[in-house]
Length: 124
Ligand SMILES: [Zn+2]
Image (cartoon, rainbow, N blue to C red; front, top):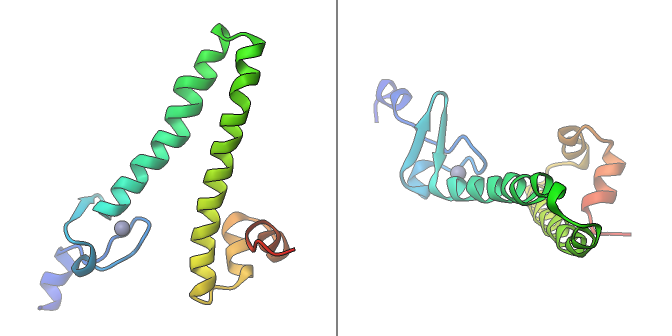
């Protein structure tokens, strides 16, 4: 493929996965960003989890909820946090598998290498 044509065509998913279009199929393009189908699905999931749950059903609903109802909801909210945390750990584990250092992972979160290790390593 000529280099000039290549710069026109999106070649990699520039969202989460960074995979080449040859691996992930058609990329959806916006200004300066190209997203594969898998990342679109993942983004939808994240939006549904982070905005759909707490905002639509939580914060806006608090006014009409009794103390009891809010207390009853807490375990579910906590379970969602755990699930999100577990997913985050998988992403970090993938980085570790690729040899990315705890220092770099920590920097991404604005925390120390030690804090990153404690949060994500799963080791004592
Ligand atoms: Zn992608």
